Length: 113
Length: 116
Image 1 (spheres, rainbow over the protein chains, first blue to last red):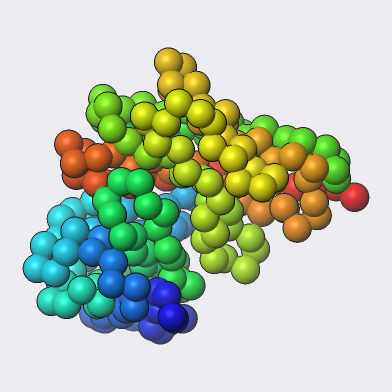
Image 2: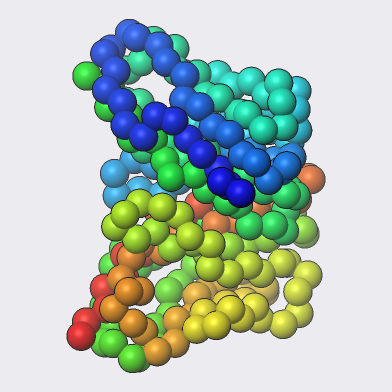
């Protein structure tokens, strides 16, 4: 099992550009999450999904979009990138919605210049 | 509304001693889970321990234990016999059940420094 994989590991984006951060899990987990972690801070939930075709907003969804067409994949789309979106992005998955630990990917370090 | 508070930005502990990292939470949901994660300087998030809101006994995992005081809404992490490798950021997190939409929120974290 690879667990949760994220690509790319690093990326520099210009202001106004768009990109998609990829996240894939091979544990057949229903629940998937996207977080961002700003320097020296905790994680903030951007979007999450409770199953294929079902997504919902977290604490900080503005400027992002997600889709969940399969159980395995949960891509995060950044439209019109802004410097405020410079952050480390973590994807995570869990088997259930409440009691199970979340398995995290290695993160994507994104810089918007 | 959900809220997680970690009031200790940084903590120092002598190697082989025990240390307690504080976490308080706020929720109106009766069903929730509390988690602790470790983030070393390499950046990955490592799950340490879980406590369910209906669990009557405090959770333990090796050198980690969770001091769960439901009435006080606190879920402190206790690390016994600290090791140099325990130096890292530690995050407390809470996930509400169906009523809360299964959202997870994290505290701001506590940076632990273990001294030799």
